[in-house]
Length: 292
Image 1 (cartoon, rainbow, N blue to C red):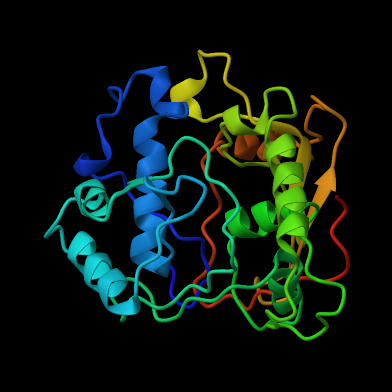
Image 2: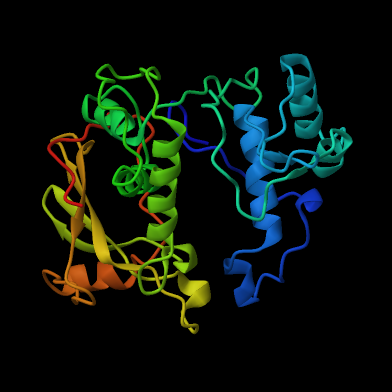
C-alpha cells in the first residue's frame, strides 16, 4: 500500500486469532486476546521473531532452529497451519498475557518478498535520524510513535553509527527501559493503552499544517473514548508541496483550534478524517529536534 515506506510489523486480525465484537460495539476498540494474538502472529510472519513462551521453562522464549522457524513462518502465512496449534506442537504458547524481555536481541529477517522487501532493527532515534537525513520514508503514525518511544528506549552510549546493533544494552538495562515504556503506556487521561486517535487538520497556514490527535473518530463520537489532547503533529511543506519537515509539539489541553476564516472553518468541519493522504512520491525529511 505504501511503496518504499518503513512500517512496523502488523496487519489484519485473522479468524484464527479469535472472535471480535460486532462492528458497532465499542469493545471493538479495546484491548483483547484476539488483538494480542494477532500482533504476535503478524510479528512472526513479517519479522521472524517468535514471541512464544516455553511451557517447560516459562521463564524463556521458545527457541527454534532456522529451518523449523522459517517453515512455520511460511506455513502460517499461507494458512496451511493454525499459528497457535503450530506453537503448541513445540510445547509452547503465544506470549499474550504480558511478554517478557527476551534474553537476547532478536534481529528481524525478510519474509522472502511476500509482504515486504527488507526487515531491520534500529533504535528509535536512529530511525528518526534516517528520516531527518531524507534516507527513508515514514508516515505520520510511525513518526509519531517513534518520537514517543524514543523517550524510553535509547541506544547504547557507545553505539555511534546508524544501524549498529553492537554493543547492545545489558539485559538489566533493556528490562529497565521496557518497564519505563510500559509505565508510560499506563499514564495519561485516558491511559495510552486506551486512547483512540483519529488525526484531523486543525490549522493550515501557507506551508504549515497542524494535525490534532484528540478525537477518536466518527464511529466513537457518542462514547467517552478520547485520543491525545497534549500533542499535535506539525507538517511543513516545500515549494512543490512535498513534506519538508515533521515535528511533534505540545499544546495546551483542550485548546480550541485557531482557524483563519470561514473557508478554513468549513475545511475544519470536513477534515475530521483518519489521516491526510501523502503523495507516494514525497521526499520526507525531518528538520531540527522534536519537541517532546
